[in-house]
Image (cartoon, rainbow, N blue to C red; front, side, top):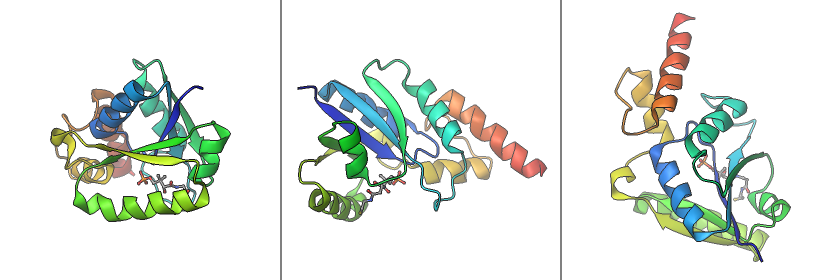
Length: 164
Ligand code: PNS
């Protein structure tokens, strides 16, 4: 049986921390599907196609990783893809409470889906998409936090917004 895992998130935008967790997941599973949340109630800086495009560029070197979007329960997305694991990165104790709640809720919804946590690499333990967006919004340096492609797209997007 093929071991398939889902790495879910908003990826607004993808960071080096996400890439680290996805790369390490790809070594543990036959196939990893990056599930990009398409939640219309969540305001994102990048549109869904943009977020997918940035992920595609960042993950093209991983041949057992695919990308798909979802606007449904994560456990239903798992069932659709015959995935029995959800892999999430854990950065600090502060992540734990929320992730624990989500894992328990998903377990209640579908006990056949196991949530697996990968500890963030120390160099990315403080990294989040929201911090990257805020640093970029104030003109700070995000190199070392995202890929050069994401850095360029952030600069272009925020320059466009300032021009409006
Ligand atoms: O990167 P994010 O925004 O922290 O990702 C959150 C995400 C998409 C993983 C989470 O909101 C999610 O799983 N959404 C799908 C809806 C769902 O299944 N909710 C679980 C019931 S508690």
